[in-house]
Amino acid sequence: MPETYQIFPVGVVHKIEEATWIEIFEPYADALLGLKGFSHILVFFWFHENDTADRRKTLRVHPRKDQKNPLTGVFGTHSPLRPNLIGLTLCKIKSIRGRRIQIEDIDAFDGTPVIDIKCYIPGSPAESDIRLPDWV
Amino acid sequence: MPETYQIFPVGVVHKIEEATWIEIFEPYADALLGLKGFSHILVFFWFHENDTADRRKTLRVHPRKDQKNPLTGVFGTHSPLRPNLIGLTLCKIKSIRGRRIQIEDIDAFDGTPVIDIKCYIPGSPAESDIRLPDWV
Image (tube, rainbow over all chains, first blue to last red; front, side, top):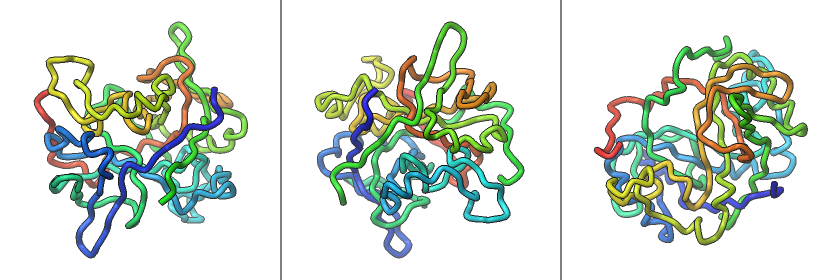
């Protein structure tokens, strides 16, 4: 197994006043065909501000930065500190115009690199008997 | 914005006969603390067999490899051909023993590199008024 893989930014998050949108970079514009048929997308982004060797070694955190929550492995959280700095948010589309996807909200900052987008299809066959720890 | 980011495999998918599990590599074992409180995880993996410059340039596909489905941008699909080869499956946990997460099923092959795991918490605030295209 290779030791590393390469990820390229395919777009960027913009947040200006009330508006939030994703700008898809020109080389990837063709990947947007048909996205208008969906109301929701999964947006994958990169926690670029944490991209240091040291921060990527963080393996345990107090969820939601609350010391009252039990120390938890990052795989049991959505912490922005993790070995691979992948963030994921389900976003509702407001409009798509050209390479600009306007969305209702995203759990990412202005300037955050977007690394993938997938359509959102609810009702995974795995989704039954959901169980969560108390801190959630 | 940097041109690339580095992703490291943190584990690997094993499928042998009826059993399916994720082996987390030793350096990341500490990131599993507390995962047992969850019934489900989001497993992020790398479509490593498609990791060529040429395949990563694929921007449009017929969803589900069915020519009857309309040509669609990969961002409107879950195609394994896409600029960044990130796969995502919601998996139900059967058991966790040491660095081995036994799961019910995953939409990935034996040997697929795992790049991240996040706990699954249903009920995103964005999830309302879902709309899908006809081919779904």
